Amino acid sequence: MLLAAEGDHADAQMVLVKQLSRDLYRTKSKELLAERNTWLDRASALGSRTAKLRLAQHYTDGSMGYPADLARARAYYRELIADAQLTSEERALQLDGAAYEQRLRELDAWEEGLENRDPAVMKAMARRYLEAQFPGPGVRGLGQKLMEQLAADGDTDARDELIVSLRTGSGGLEKDIEAARAWLIKAAEADDPDAMDRLAGNYMNGREGFPVDYPAARRWTEALITLYQGSDDRQVQAHVQELQSNLEYIDRLGEYAGSTMLSSRDLEQLGDRTDPESQYEHAIQLLVGHGSKRRSEAISDLEEAASKGHGAAAWRLVQVYERGFPQEIDQAAGLRYLKLAVANHDFDATRELAMRYEYGKRGVPVDLARAIALYEDALAAGHDNRHGWNLDPDNFNHYRWLESRLRQARLKHDALLKDAVAGR
Image (tube, rainbow, N blue to C red; front, side, top):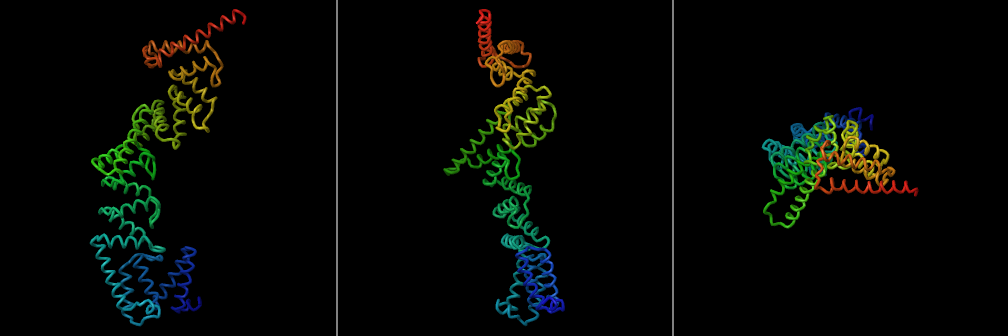
Protein backbone atom coordinates (compact mmCIF):
# COMPACT_ATOMS: atom_id res chain seq x y z
CA MET A 1 0.00 0.00 0.00
CA LEU A 2 2.85 2.35 0.82
CA LEU A 3 4.57 1.59 -2.46
CA ALA A 4 1.34 2.28 -4.31
CA ALA A 5 0.88 5.54 -2.47
CA GLU A 6 4.45 6.59 -3.20
CA GLY A 7 3.72 5.76 -6.86
CA ASP A 8 0.95 8.42 -6.84
CA HIS A 9 -1.99 6.05 -6.49
CA ALA A 10 -4.57 8.41 -4.98
CA ASP A 11 -6.81 5.68 -3.55
CA ALA A 12 -3.82 4.09 -1.81
CA GLN A 13 -2.90 7.50 -0.42
CA MET A 14 -6.41 7.90 1.00
CA VAL A 15 -6.19 4.46 2.59
CA LEU A 16 -3.06 5.67 4.37
CA VAL A 17 -4.85 8.88 5.38
CA LYS A 18 -7.62 6.80 6.95
CA GLN A 19 -5.17 4.52 8.76
CA LEU A 20 -3.05 7.43 10.02
CA SER A 21 -6.18 9.23 11.22
CA ARG A 22 -7.09 6.26 13.42
CA ASP A 23 -3.55 6.13 14.83
CA LEU A 24 -3.60 9.89 15.33
CA TYR A 25 -6.67 9.85 17.57
CA ARG A 26 -4.92 7.24 19.68
CA THR A 27 -1.44 8.76 19.90
CA LYS A 28 -2.01 12.52 19.37
CA SER A 29 1.30 12.45 17.49
CA LYS A 30 2.25 15.62 15.60
CA GLU A 31 4.48 13.53 13.36
CA LEU A 32 1.55 11.31 12.35
CA LEU A 33 -0.60 14.39 11.72
CA ALA A 34 2.04 15.84 9.39
CA GLU A 35 2.40 12.52 7.55
CA ARG A 36 -1.40 12.17 7.22
CA ASN A 37 -1.75 15.65 5.77
CA THR A 38 1.11 15.10 3.32
CA TRP A 39 -0.76 12.15 1.83
CA LEU A 40 -4.04 14.05 1.89
CA ASP A 41 -2.56 17.00 -0.02
CA ARG A 42 -0.94 14.67 -2.55
CA ALA A 43 -4.21 12.80 -3.12
CA SER A 44 -6.05 16.08 -3.61
CA ALA A 45 -3.46 17.24 -6.14
CA LEU A 46 -4.03 13.96 -8.02
CA GLY A 47 -7.76 14.79 -8.24
CA SER A 48 -9.18 12.64 -5.41
CA ARG A 49 -12.71 13.90 -4.66
CA THR A 50 -12.58 12.33 -1.22
CA ALA A 51 -9.39 14.25 -0.43
CA LYS A 52 -10.91 17.52 -1.69
CA LEU A 53 -13.99 16.98 0.46
CA ARG A 54 -11.82 16.35 3.51
CA LEU A 55 -9.79 19.48 2.83
CA ALA A 56 -12.91 21.58 2.32
CA GLN A 57 -14.13 20.44 5.75
CA HIS A 58 -10.74 20.98 7.41
CA TYR A 59 -10.36 24.52 6.06
CA THR A 60 -13.91 25.30 7.14
CA ASP A 61 -13.30 24.12 10.72
CA GLY A 62 -9.60 24.83 11.02
CA SER A 63 -9.20 21.19 12.02
CA MET A 64 -6.61 18.43 11.56
CA GLY A 65 -3.69 20.85 11.47
CA TYR A 66 -5.12 23.08 8.72
CA PRO A 67 -5.81 26.79 9.25
CA ALA A 68 -9.32 28.21 9.15
CA ASP A 69 -9.64 29.53 5.59
CA LEU A 70 -13.14 29.88 4.21
CA ALA A 71 -11.84 31.04 0.83
CA ARG A 72 -9.86 27.81 0.34
CA ALA A 73 -12.79 25.74 1.59
CA ARG A 74 -14.98 27.49 -0.98
CA ALA A 75 -12.48 26.71 -3.74
CA TYR A 76 -12.54 22.98 -2.95
CA TYR A 77 -16.36 22.88 -2.96
CA ARG A 78 -16.36 24.58 -6.34
CA GLU A 79 -13.98 21.95 -7.69
CA LEU A 80 -16.35 19.25 -6.44
CA ILE A 81 -19.29 20.98 -8.13
CA ALA A 82 -17.38 21.33 -11.41
CA ASP A 83 -16.72 17.57 -11.53
CA ALA A 84 -20.14 15.92 -11.29
CA GLN A 85 -18.81 12.35 -11.05
CA LEU A 86 -19.70 11.31 -7.47
CA THR A 87 -17.91 8.68 -5.41
CA SER A 88 -19.72 5.87 -3.64
CA GLU A 89 -18.98 7.62 -0.33
CA GLU A 90 -20.65 10.82 -1.54
CA ARG A 91 -23.70 8.94 -2.74
CA ALA A 92 -23.95 7.15 0.61
CA LEU A 93 -23.77 10.49 2.42
CA GLN A 94 -26.18 12.08 -0.08
CA LEU A 95 -23.61 14.66 -1.08
CA ASP A 96 -23.93 16.07 -4.60
CA GLY A 97 -23.64 19.34 -6.46
CA ALA A 98 -26.77 20.76 -4.78
CA ALA A 99 -25.39 19.91 -1.34
CA TYR A 100 -22.11 21.62 -2.16
CA GLU A 101 -23.94 24.69 -3.47
CA GLN A 102 -25.69 24.80 -0.11
CA ARG A 103 -22.31 24.62 1.61
CA LEU A 104 -21.12 27.59 -0.46
CA ARG A 105 -24.18 29.60 0.56
CA GLU A 106 -23.49 28.74 4.19
CA LEU A 107 -19.89 29.92 3.87
CA ASP A 108 -21.08 33.16 2.31
CA ALA A 109 -23.58 33.65 5.13
CA TRP A 110 -20.92 32.96 7.74
CA GLU A 111 -18.52 35.48 6.22
CA GLU A 112 -21.26 38.08 6.01
CA GLY A 113 -22.32 37.36 9.60
CA LEU A 114 -18.74 37.71 10.84
CA GLU A 115 -18.32 40.96 8.96
CA ASN A 116 -21.56 42.34 10.46
CA ARG A 117 -20.75 40.97 13.95
CA ASP A 118 -23.87 38.81 14.00
CA PRO A 119 -23.86 37.27 17.51
CA ALA A 120 -25.34 33.94 16.42
CA VAL A 121 -22.80 33.48 13.64
CA MET A 122 -19.92 34.66 15.80
CA LYS A 123 -20.85 32.24 18.55
CA ALA A 124 -21.27 29.34 16.12
CA MET A 125 -17.91 30.01 14.48
CA ALA A 126 -16.21 30.52 17.83
CA ARG A 127 -17.39 27.12 19.00
CA ARG A 128 -16.40 25.55 15.68
CA TYR A 129 -12.86 26.88 16.01
CA LEU A 130 -12.52 26.18 19.74
CA GLU A 131 -13.83 22.62 19.38
CA ALA A 132 -11.84 21.77 16.23
CA GLN A 133 -9.98 18.49 16.47
CA PHE A 134 -6.21 18.97 16.14
CA PRO A 135 -6.67 22.68 15.35
CA GLY A 136 -4.43 24.33 12.83
CA PRO A 137 -2.23 27.36 13.49
CA GLY A 138 -4.14 30.30 14.92
CA VAL A 139 -7.48 28.49 14.99
CA ARG A 140 -7.91 28.55 18.78
CA GLY A 141 -6.91 32.21 18.72
CA LEU A 142 -9.66 32.96 16.19
CA GLY A 143 -12.19 31.25 18.41
CA GLN A 144 -11.00 33.16 21.46
CA LYS A 145 -11.08 36.46 19.54
CA LEU A 146 -14.69 35.87 18.52
CA MET A 147 -15.66 35.03 22.10
CA GLU A 148 -13.92 38.18 23.32
CA GLN A 149 -15.77 40.27 20.72
CA LEU A 150 -19.07 38.78 21.88
CA ALA A 151 -18.19 39.46 25.51
CA ALA A 152 -17.16 43.03 24.69
CA ASP A 153 -20.52 43.50 22.91
CA GLY A 154 -22.35 42.53 26.10
CA ASP A 155 -23.03 38.83 25.55
CA THR A 156 -23.03 37.68 29.17
CA ASP A 157 -23.09 33.98 28.29
CA ALA A 158 -19.98 34.36 26.13
CA ARG A 159 -18.30 36.43 28.83
CA ASP A 160 -19.05 33.88 31.56
CA GLU A 161 -17.88 31.02 29.37
CA LEU A 162 -14.72 32.94 28.54
CA ILE A 163 -13.97 33.57 32.22
CA VAL A 164 -14.37 29.89 33.12
CA SER A 165 -12.39 28.64 30.12
CA LEU A 166 -9.50 31.03 30.71
CA ARG A 167 -9.41 30.30 34.42
CA THR A 168 -9.44 26.52 34.03
CA GLY A 169 -7.78 26.05 30.64
CA SER A 170 -10.85 24.36 29.20
CA GLY A 171 -13.19 24.83 26.25
CA GLY A 172 -10.33 24.93 23.79
CA LEU A 173 -8.53 27.83 25.50
CA GLU A 174 -5.15 27.95 27.17
CA LYS A 175 -5.20 28.72 30.87
CA ASP A 176 -4.69 32.47 31.37
CA ILE A 177 -5.39 33.62 34.92
CA GLU A 178 -4.62 37.26 34.16
CA ALA A 179 -7.06 37.36 31.26
CA ALA A 180 -9.73 35.59 33.31
CA ARG A 181 -9.25 38.16 36.07
CA ALA A 182 -9.59 41.04 33.60
CA TRP A 183 -12.86 39.69 32.19
CA LEU A 184 -14.29 39.08 35.65
CA ILE A 185 -13.50 42.66 36.62
CA LYS A 186 -15.17 43.91 33.42
CA ALA A 187 -18.24 41.86 34.25
CA ALA A 188 -18.37 43.30 37.76
CA GLU A 189 -17.93 46.82 36.41
CA ALA A 190 -20.94 46.17 34.21
CA ASP A 191 -22.97 45.57 37.43
CA ASP A 192 -23.25 41.82 36.97
CA PRO A 193 -24.20 40.75 40.52
CA ASP A 194 -22.70 37.27 40.18
CA ALA A 195 -19.40 38.73 38.99
CA MET A 196 -19.44 41.36 41.75
CA ASP A 197 -20.09 38.66 44.34
CA ARG A 198 -17.35 36.42 42.97
CA LEU A 199 -14.91 39.31 42.77
CA ALA A 200 -15.56 40.35 46.37
CA GLY A 201 -15.03 36.75 47.52
CA ASN A 202 -11.85 36.41 45.48
CA TYR A 203 -10.38 39.56 47.02
CA MET A 204 -11.44 38.39 50.47
CA ASN A 205 -9.89 34.94 50.18
CA GLY A 206 -7.17 35.31 47.53
CA ARG A 207 -8.75 32.90 45.04
CA GLU A 208 -8.63 32.46 41.26
CA GLY A 209 -5.44 34.43 40.82
CA PHE A 210 -6.56 37.43 42.87
CA PRO A 211 -4.48 38.73 45.77
CA VAL A 212 -5.99 39.13 49.21
CA ASP A 213 -7.15 42.75 49.16
CA TYR A 214 -9.58 43.70 51.91
CA PRO A 215 -10.25 47.28 50.74
CA ALA A 216 -11.17 45.92 47.28
CA ALA A 217 -13.33 43.22 48.90
CA ARG A 218 -15.07 45.94 50.89
CA ARG A 219 -15.69 48.11 47.82
CA TRP A 220 -17.29 45.32 45.83
CA THR A 221 -19.26 44.04 48.80
CA GLU A 222 -20.66 47.50 49.47
CA ALA A 223 -21.44 47.97 45.77
CA LEU A 224 -23.31 44.67 45.73
CA ILE A 225 -25.29 45.59 48.84
CA THR A 226 -26.24 48.88 47.17
CA LEU A 227 -27.30 47.00 44.04
CA TYR A 228 -29.54 44.72 46.10
CA GLN A 229 -31.16 47.53 48.07
CA GLY A 230 -34.93 47.45 48.02
CA SER A 231 -35.17 43.82 46.88
CA ASP A 232 -38.08 41.85 48.35
CA ASP A 233 -36.53 38.50 47.46
CA ARG A 234 -35.87 36.54 50.65
CA GLN A 235 -32.80 34.83 49.25
CA VAL A 236 -31.35 38.19 48.25
CA GLN A 237 -32.12 39.62 51.69
CA ALA A 238 -30.40 36.65 53.35
CA HIS A 239 -27.39 37.13 51.11
CA VAL A 240 -27.24 40.82 52.01
CA GLN A 241 -26.97 39.78 55.65
CA GLU A 242 -24.03 37.53 54.74
CA LEU A 243 -22.41 40.43 52.92
CA GLN A 244 -22.89 42.66 55.95
CA SER A 245 -21.18 39.99 58.06
CA ASN A 246 -18.24 40.05 55.65
CA LEU A 247 -17.89 43.80 56.17
CA GLU A 248 -17.95 43.33 59.94
CA TYR A 249 -15.28 40.64 59.60
CA ILE A 250 -13.02 43.03 57.66
CA ASP A 251 -13.52 45.64 60.39
CA ARG A 252 -12.55 43.11 63.08
CA LEU A 253 -9.39 42.23 61.19
CA GLY A 254 -8.50 45.91 61.14
CA GLU A 255 -8.99 46.07 64.90
CA TYR A 256 -6.73 43.04 65.39
CA ALA A 257 -4.10 44.67 63.17
CA GLY A 258 -4.37 47.93 65.07
CA SER A 259 -5.31 49.81 61.90
CA THR A 260 -7.29 49.34 58.71
CA MET A 261 -6.40 46.43 56.47
CA LEU A 262 -4.19 47.51 53.58
CA SER A 263 -4.76 46.97 49.89
CA SER A 264 -2.52 44.41 48.20
CA ARG A 265 -0.56 47.19 46.52
CA ASP A 266 -0.04 49.17 49.73
CA LEU A 267 0.87 45.98 51.56
CA GLU A 268 3.56 45.10 49.05
CA GLN A 269 4.93 48.65 49.15
CA LEU A 270 5.07 48.42 52.95
CA GLY A 271 6.90 45.12 52.62
CA ASP A 272 9.61 46.79 50.54
CA ARG A 273 10.54 49.10 53.41
CA THR A 274 13.30 48.02 55.80
CA ASP A 275 12.76 50.18 58.89
CA PRO A 276 11.65 48.09 61.92
CA GLU A 277 8.26 49.79 62.37
CA SER A 278 7.30 49.10 58.72
CA GLN A 279 8.49 45.51 59.02
CA TYR A 280 6.40 45.10 62.16
CA GLU A 281 3.27 46.60 60.58
CA HIS A 282 3.76 44.46 57.47
CA ALA A 283 4.09 41.32 59.58
CA ILE A 284 0.93 42.08 61.59
CA GLN A 285 -1.07 42.63 58.41
CA LEU A 286 0.12 39.24 57.12
CA LEU A 287 -0.55 37.41 60.39
CA VAL A 288 -4.02 38.89 60.81
CA GLY A 289 -5.29 38.89 57.26
CA HIS A 290 -3.43 36.21 55.31
CA GLY A 291 -3.56 33.10 57.50
CA SER A 292 -0.94 30.47 56.87
CA LYS A 293 -0.19 31.50 53.28
CA ARG A 294 2.33 34.18 54.19
CA ARG A 295 3.01 33.32 57.82
CA SER A 296 6.67 32.45 57.32
CA GLU A 297 7.19 35.83 55.64
CA ALA A 298 5.54 37.54 58.61
CA ILE A 299 7.74 35.70 61.12
CA SER A 300 10.85 36.64 59.15
CA ASP A 301 9.79 40.30 59.25
CA LEU A 302 9.17 40.12 62.99
CA GLU A 303 12.55 38.55 63.64
CA GLU A 304 14.34 41.22 61.63
CA ALA A 305 12.40 44.03 63.32
CA ALA A 306 13.09 42.52 66.75
CA SER A 307 16.80 42.32 65.97
CA LYS A 308 16.67 46.07 65.29
CA GLY A 309 15.22 46.77 68.72
CA HIS A 310 11.48 46.72 68.04
CA GLY A 311 9.99 45.52 71.32
CA ALA A 312 6.46 44.88 70.03
CA ALA A 313 7.88 42.66 67.27
CA ALA A 314 9.78 40.61 69.85
CA TRP A 315 6.64 40.30 71.98
CA ARG A 316 4.63 39.08 68.98
CA LEU A 317 7.31 36.44 68.37
CA VAL A 318 6.80 35.21 71.93
CA GLN A 319 3.18 34.49 71.03
CA VAL A 320 4.22 32.82 67.77
CA TYR A 321 6.79 30.50 69.36
CA GLU A 322 4.80 29.69 72.49
CA ARG A 323 1.20 29.62 71.25
CA GLY A 324 1.45 29.41 67.47
CA PHE A 325 1.03 26.49 65.10
CA PRO A 326 2.43 23.19 66.44
CA GLN A 327 5.34 23.20 63.99
CA GLU A 328 6.35 26.64 65.28
CA ILE A 329 6.41 25.86 69.01
CA ASP A 330 9.86 26.62 70.43
CA GLN A 331 9.83 27.46 74.14
CA ALA A 332 13.49 28.44 74.21
CA ALA A 333 13.00 30.89 71.34
CA GLY A 334 9.89 32.23 73.03
CA LEU A 335 11.76 32.97 76.25
CA ARG A 336 14.65 34.52 74.33
CA TYR A 337 12.32 36.90 72.49
CA LEU A 338 10.42 37.65 75.70
CA LYS A 339 13.61 38.91 77.33
CA LEU A 340 14.49 40.82 74.16
CA ALA A 341 11.05 42.46 74.17
CA VAL A 342 11.51 43.49 77.80
CA ALA A 343 14.95 44.89 77.03
CA ASN A 344 13.31 46.97 74.31
CA HIS A 345 10.61 48.28 76.66
CA ASP A 346 7.49 46.43 75.55
CA PHE A 347 4.88 46.78 78.28
CA ASP A 348 3.04 43.48 77.71
CA ALA A 349 6.34 41.58 77.67
CA THR A 350 7.50 43.31 80.87
CA ARG A 351 4.30 42.39 82.64
CA GLU A 352 4.51 38.80 81.38
CA LEU A 353 8.13 38.26 82.44
CA ALA A 354 7.45 39.75 85.88
CA MET A 355 4.59 37.27 86.39
CA ARG A 356 6.77 34.39 85.27
CA TYR A 357 9.42 35.32 87.84
CA GLU A 358 6.71 35.70 90.46
CA TYR A 359 5.10 32.30 89.80
CA GLY A 360 7.88 30.33 88.09
CA LYS A 361 6.18 29.66 84.75
CA ARG A 362 7.25 28.60 81.24
CA GLY A 363 10.88 27.80 81.93
CA VAL A 364 11.50 30.71 84.32
CA PRO A 365 12.35 29.91 87.97
CA VAL A 366 10.66 31.73 90.82
CA ASP A 367 12.65 34.89 91.48
CA LEU A 368 10.62 37.38 93.50
CA ALA A 369 13.40 39.96 93.57
CA ARG A 370 13.42 40.11 89.77
CA ALA A 371 9.63 40.15 89.64
CA ILE A 372 9.51 43.09 92.07
CA ALA A 373 12.16 44.95 90.08
CA LEU A 374 10.20 44.52 86.87
CA TYR A 375 6.93 45.64 88.48
CA GLU A 376 8.69 48.67 89.97
CA ASP A 377 10.32 49.58 86.66
CA ALA A 378 6.98 49.31 84.89
CA LEU A 379 5.27 51.57 87.40
CA ALA A 380 8.09 54.09 87.24
CA ALA A 381 7.92 54.12 83.46
CA GLY A 382 4.19 54.62 83.73
CA HIS A 383 4.72 57.64 85.95
CA ASP A 384 7.06 59.50 83.62
CA ASN A 385 5.90 57.84 80.35
CA ARG A 386 9.52 57.27 79.39
CA HIS A 387 8.60 54.43 77.01
CA GLY A 388 5.32 55.84 75.73
CA TRP A 389 3.23 53.31 77.63
CA ASN A 390 0.64 55.91 78.68
CA LEU A 391 -0.36 54.02 81.83
CA ASP A 392 -3.51 55.54 83.26
CA PRO A 393 -3.57 55.46 87.11
CA ASP A 394 -7.33 54.88 86.89
CA ASN A 395 -6.96 51.93 84.56
CA PHE A 396 -7.06 48.70 86.58
CA ASN A 397 -5.88 46.57 83.67
CA HIS A 398 -2.59 48.42 83.60
CA TYR A 399 -1.52 50.73 86.36
CA ARG A 400 -3.76 49.40 89.16
CA TRP A 401 -3.01 45.83 88.16
CA LEU A 402 0.72 46.53 88.43
CA GLU A 403 0.32 48.06 91.85
CA SER A 404 -1.66 45.03 92.99
CA ARG A 405 0.92 42.57 91.64
CA LEU A 406 3.79 44.54 93.19
CA ARG A 407 2.13 44.41 96.62
CA GLN A 408 1.57 40.66 96.30
CA ALA A 409 5.16 40.02 95.19
CA ARG A 410 6.53 42.10 98.07
CA LEU A 411 4.35 40.23 100.57
CA LYS A 412 5.63 36.92 99.24
CA HIS A 413 9.20 38.16 99.29
CA ASP A 414 8.89 39.47 102.87
CA ALA A 415 7.34 36.18 103.98
CA LEU A 416 10.25 34.26 102.50
CA LEU A 417 12.73 36.54 104.27
CA LYS A 418 10.96 36.03 107.60
CA ASP A 419 11.00 32.28 107.07
CA ALA A 420 14.70 32.43 106.24
CA VAL A 421 15.46 34.49 109.37
CA ALA A 422 13.41 32.11 111.48
CA GLY A 423 15.37 29.23 110.04
CA ARG A 424 12.39 27.52 108.55
